[in-house]
Length: 167
Length: 84
Image 1 (spheres, chains in turn yellow, blue):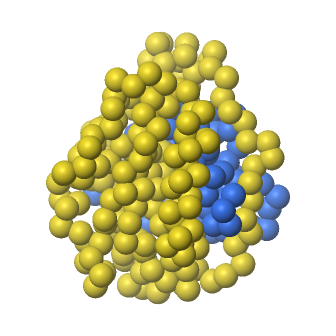
Image 2 (tube, rainbow over the protein chains, first blue to last red; image 1 turned 90 degrees about the vertical axis):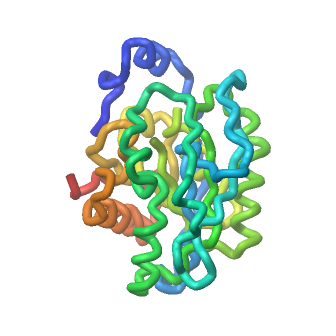
Image 3 (spheres, chains in turn purple, blue; image 1 turned 60 degrees about the horizontal axis):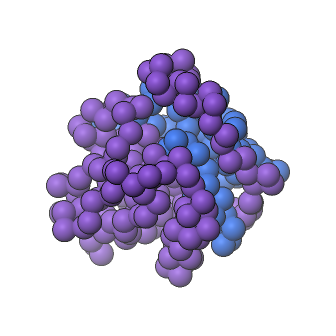
């Protein structure tokens, strides 16, 4: 388990004094279906984007709250070719990016979920993953605009379950 | 800040009627946000599902996180991963 003490002194000082947004109460949707019949979407804050997409703005004050929709699979269950050249636009120096640079599945586990789909553990991996840059210190716009937009996008696509990963 | 962002996005998704589950490498931070469902893993910052090119570990973390969907709540539902 990573600890705040594992961060650089600069990041420790920031985290120790930052006022996090507590979800109180935390929204809740009970899951009553079967995973084997569910459409699952991946959401990450690893700031992945594809060639041809606008990179995240690493200079934006408070953090870039936008997201990128990544086409991660072809209709026949094959990995999207574009993933071979996935880009990482994360601005944070609080984590070691070597892992996700070596294997995007570490934060965007497309290959693992396609395996689970083939095995019948999940119904289907949603064609599109959503990628944010998690380094957001002023999350007002995220809460009011971009996260609800992303949620509505998943709802319109009849997604049943979302699986989220930070870095 | 990634862990706060995940929790806030997760909350927005739950709010439209989609069940979510997530992974955290830092319980100290995630506790301050309180996402609806979360699996605490033992890995460093930047390595939420374990190790690169280690599909066995990645899969085990994913399956443990998906198991949280079976919990009836109330939120926040959190568990420490068995896989290390």
